[in-house]
Length: 490
Image (cartoon, rainbow, N blue to C red; front, top):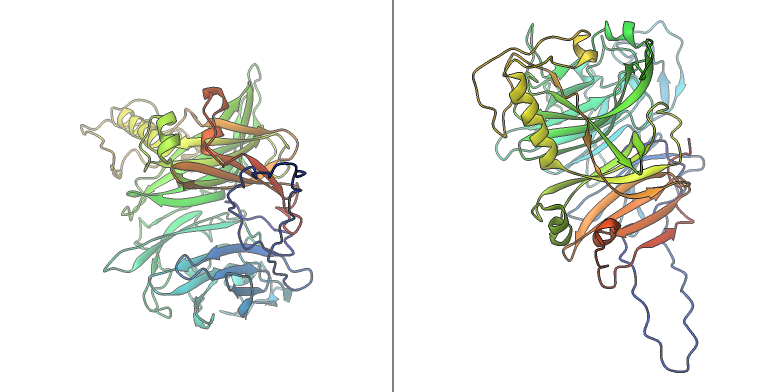
């Protein structure tokens, strides 16, 4: 889910709680009052913002990326180790950063905002990327947060100069006998000449290797990256792509994004800027990024459009929900939160919706679009990357489910929006985050709200129009978290 600057003063040890069933009362006894739950909490330094959190699925240890600090906590939120990452003397105009060469810009004491936190399980290390020095990363040993490496001497080591915590998203693709890959997607803040918006990097076994974070492939003409053309900024001066979520499934890596575009309202001759939510898909093994495809996604309920993506989470269908959707229990589902409208990215409306996408259905739509384009139908329809429409080229080939593109008809955009299935709406307390998992064949969704509430919706109650039965002892619950504040209200 998108990481925004959290105002968290403490953390919850267990967010995913199964609702309690009704108590059995003894005869002639008054009803039992609900007991107050006690939560284990952790408080950082005064005025310290927490930006990211990852949990080691093997040990239960929790790693927290904060401003100027990385924490390692036990499963009961006791501090085990801390690693300081800032502040330091810096200036965002220093490119290359001043740690590489002298910078004539005035230097000031600058905080290091954690922008990405990933566990590299194969090499037992934490990848912690910050906002200092144009966005460089540290590789820290999981056990004690000892710094194993900090690549900074090449331009590909600078991920992004944006200092917002939600500006970078990474997905690790792991291999048995080869070095892993790291797909990195980032906002570029008007500096496309410095930073690719999406790229695949080498994740070497040696944390101090010269090739760490180098592009998987790079020659004079082709590289494992996508850059925003400078011409795009002449059409949309503040154009950028904001990455909300990322994951891998099957042979592909996916990113969910928000990006501006210019559209003509019905009956108008002038264009206005709106924000569009899109899914981006790439083949894991595509070194030239010929497989790049964008698909607009959104949701509609009761005639209301929900188009501003707030958060997303990949989970399985589970047996009960799978029967309703007509899919297999092991199929991937995207649980997404959208807010109403699509014009104000930074000031979302409180009306929001929880929607589900079946990933296979999105892939089927991409496959149809690829096949039609290779029949020579339509244009590439990716205005921000090609600036102008380029006709599709005809080629005699059949597109299968794992097609990874050629050096033609790429990158490609899908014009028709794929609509999710709305399962829950909230009109006053905007949903800002979501997580889901399968419990005893039931798919459970949890959403966090702007005011700090955690709402739980069992999968069998996600479709009220289908008149499904509630799962036994799994009622819908709303839990107010007094110790946990959600993202800053917009």
